[in-house]
Length: 366
Ligand SMILES: [Ca+2]
Ligand SMILES: [Ca+2]
Ligand SMILES: [Ca+2]
Image 1 (tube, rainbow, N blue to C red):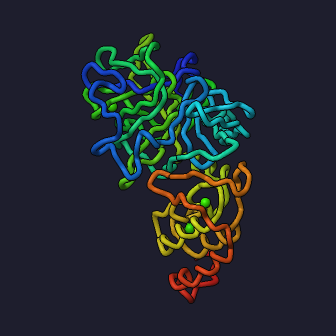
Image 2 (cartoon, rainbow, N blue to C red; image 1 turned 90 degrees about the vertical axis):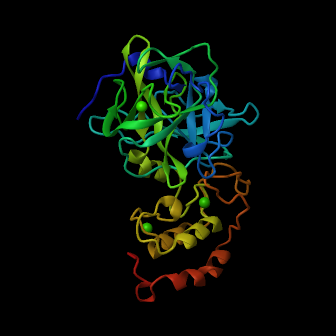
Image 3 (tube, rainbow, N blue to C red; image 1 turned 90 degrees about the horizontal axis):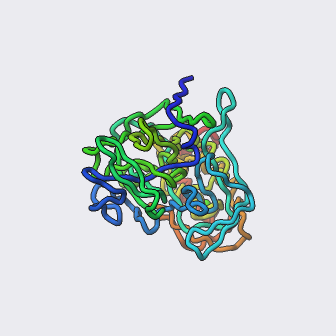
């Protein structure tokens, strides 16, 4: 197993940030738009609603991935009972934390799934596909700003405010990369910092650990990585940014949060999910959990419907039953109250039945 030791132990609690600049750059460098623009924009994609938050006191960042779950790095300490306020008004309490199963020699994966006590307003879509070199990425985090440090290197300014920033880059190492600071070992990918690189070339900075790195799928940006490490050649100059790959832990993340049928990840299996499944019913390949493919075979068919039906009405929300959720998933999810009534689901069945082959209607493997 390849385990690069390129990461100084001292970086384990650092993290990153968005340094930018093609020329003399600063993160959120002069010229970086306040919001995503041009090729960097996407359906429902806005800095004002993006589900990337600052973790307690700026020690790091975290990305909302469902109604009550945040994804961050394991090298940031999160403990049940911790309190957190993303906006200084609403306060959340950590209910539990969990980590993906360690691979190989038992070294922990640098990923933490945090369960909160009540729903968040926004969450991001998990990417579950292959990664390729030269793919454009957007990096987002609540880290320090910075500047180039001569040549294709960057550094950060510890006096800069830890605010939400974004920058861009392209993937240079796409797969099979271990991000390892000696304590953790994770599947990941990496981006090099080049002063003549992407529009708003950036690298991770202190405070960006746990933030998100996104890639565009169609017209939507999906969470491909959790910001984790920077690589450096001299004392304080860096040129590599490493993210823990979300797709490598996709099934674990989903299955840790909810049950089959919950397509929109609001942690309830309801009519809204049924509507998603009905809309995509008949897809034979390329479908994701968000499309209604709950068994991971890429198709949306009767087997997925049966899984939803079996769990209809179930909830993994910590919040009291009946508490309205405020979800507005990226890409637009229904924010309306959902009738938690199986009768409604069954009433809608005829439409679904028309779509499936009658001769194989009872075959659970469809
Ligand atoms: Ca680059
Ligand atoms: Ca749901
Ligand atoms: Ca399926």
